[in-house]
Length: 226
Image (cartoon, rainbow, N blue to C red; front, side, top):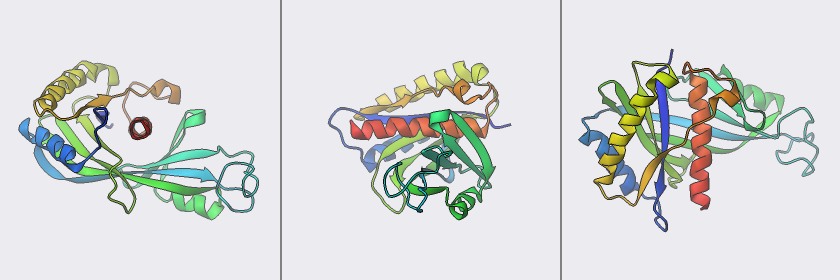
């Protein structure tokens, strides 16, 4: 069973633009806590729009009529630690589905959904005792444009969200203190996902991770727009 994870995103100070130096300083914080670099990682999110009856992707009423039984949009999540799986999230209906990695090709052949935007979360992984930290950037596919900075914190010994909460909170406090010493223009934020809305239990799963990425992405996009 997967270990519990928290996802956190960087919230810059007002008027400050995201830059690669902040990402480098965050990686430096992991190393200052004793983290040992352990390779790279990459998770991808895809925005899909339902195909219209004439084959175009877009809202109903534009360039054809949308299939009536399809949700208007969904998110696809390809997690770095499970390359053979693919997760689909229908936010409007609070559904998270797990499928084979070939699922996007199936959707394309069925002409049900078309990918409109792809975003990659990628960076370095650090081992720190019972924790694993993954710190990286969010950028559009085939682009170096920085849309956000985020971090995964995984605690290996526990898979219960509630039992691990106090430990994760203590670690987050230590992390925030370490970042504060760098006097960086901003801070990391952890926004809890409402897993029960998606029918997920206290026992952590890869579906929980997919939902957290969807939540983190919403917060990042709100930060960019703000």
